[in-house]
Length: 398
Image (cartoon, rainbow, N blue to C red):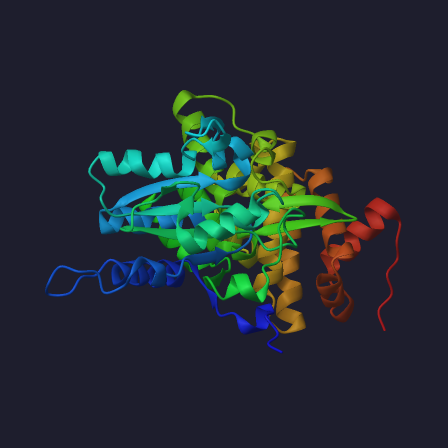
C-alpha cells in the first residue's frame, strides 16, 4: 500500500511553486503546428497548492495568470452557499405532464464565462480553500474536477483549474485527501521562505523598516500556533497589510503604535519586538549606534539622545542593546566579552545615570544565562558595583 504522507511530497518555495505552475499551464495551453492543443482538457490535471494560511498561495496563481496574459477567476469554495456553487433549483415540465428539477448556472461557471466575454479565451480558475468544502459540496467539487461540469454547464476547455488548501493542522475544517483524489491532482506543498518574501516585498514597495526587520529576524516571518499558550498568527499576508498601514499612517501624520501592529501581527512577542525596532529606528537609534555603545566608541550626540529619551525609548533601546550584545560576544573570549558588558554600564552612567535604565540592564544580565556566565567567569567591576549599590549583594568569585 502506498503511504501518502508529507514525506512523499516535494516541498516548494514560493518562487519554485510559481515557476512550476507557470511552466505547467504554458504546457497545458501549448498548441501544435495545426493550432490544436497538445493536451486534451481531460488530461490537464489540476494543480493542488497546499500550504499554511497567509503564505501567498492565491497571490502566486494570480501572478502567473498576469504574466501569461490570460484570464483569472479566484473563487473561495468556503465563502459561498450550496445554491451559489450548484445553482438554484428550477421545476421543469415534461411533455407527458411530468416534472423534474433542473438547476440554474453555478456562480463558478458564470464567473469564468464573464471573463471569457471580456476577451480572456484562456485562463485560470482558482478554487481556494478547496479541501475545506462542506460534506454537501465535496462530491460536486470532485465531479467537477473530472468532468469540468456542474449540472448542465461546463467551464471552457481552454481554462485550467488550480486548487489551493491549508493542511489540516492549520484548519479544523480541512480534510485529508484520499489516494483517489490525490491521483487526480498535481500536489505541491508550499513552505515559508524569507528570500522569496523579501524579493516579493521589494516589488510591492513594502515599508523599508519591514524589510530591514525581516533581514535581521527572518524567523519572525511566519508563526501560526494554537496551543496552551494561546493562538498566535503571524503570516506574510499580515506583514504586507501592516506595511501598507504603516505607510498610510505616516503619510497622514497619524499615531502608529504597538496596538496597531498587534491587529496584524498576532503574537505579542513579535509585535513588541517589531515595535521596539520601529520606534528606535524612527528615533535615530540604529545598529551602528548600538554597536558603538557595545564597543565603547560612542559620540556625544548619542549620549544626548539617551539623556533626552523617555521611558519607552530607554526600554526599547535596552532590548536592542541586549540582542546586539549577545550577538557581538558569541565568538569573543570571556575577558573581551566582559569588557563589552562594562562598556554598556559605563555608557548608561554617562548618559545621565538613569537608575531605572542601569537596573534594567543589570536584570538583563542576571536573567540571561549566556551573559551571566560571562560575568561569573570574569570579575566585572561594573556589574558588581550595581549589585552592591542597588541590592546590597556581595557576589564572590572562585
